[in-house]
Length: 154
Image (cartoon, rainbow, N blue to C red; front, side, top):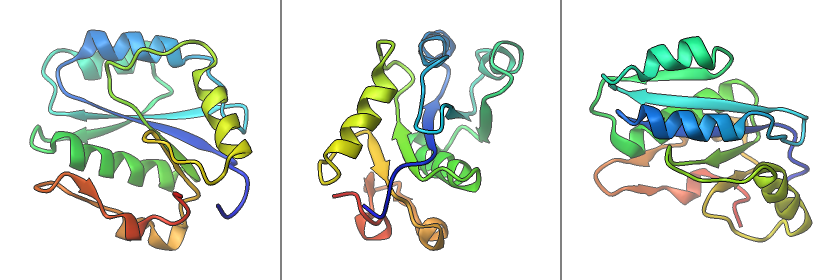
């Protein structure tokens, strides 16, 4: 790891699962990242169930990335990570829209990652180098992250 985590972003892809997403976002309200705030990016991939309207009215401070309905999980995560990096996130917390969490989830995960910097997490990507941000991508057909494009995961 190249240094302490300063800003954490949560990236949440979704497609027509408004109620699950709403429940998760309600749980994430008040979760604290290292900068005292958690930046949330929701990637809405062509939802037709009122997800965009719900986000606009009930969660106006959340960043929203819109997909065309053909992004699926991999491209949605990729585009969400790009958005998070453009907002100066140096760690990314990947979450499914139906994730169930308790109140100290984010702060506990981040604290553990700082105490054990070489530990791996299937949810947290740490220390993203800005110069490689444009190279970060998922291969949608293979559904795997090209790890050589991310530094300091392990």
